[in-house]
Image (cartoon, rainbow, N blue to C red; front, top):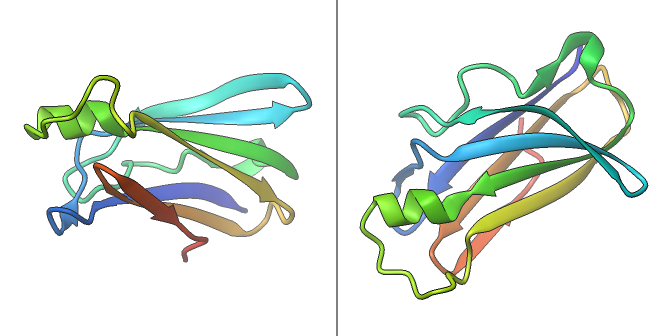
Length: 117
């Protein structure tokens, strides 16, 4: 069975990003359905997959990473509004039986992602 997981690394500090709120949505046209959410642990990972088993279907998904809250909690002096507050990553699941790992590398002024393993 497939699954969707994530991992967040703070590239400015060189460490996992703990305590980042994360939400997963399924997208269908203009409709957006929240499927799960949580916060990252001390290793920058969610304690369980955002989605797995029968719940994962072929389609388009979006993860919202609430990095502004994390950066502010770490004492980062962000402008108002912050350059990055909520980072959306939209991705497609073509094979529901595969593992889709969606890591995020963040700093106050940039981010990147890729399909991990």
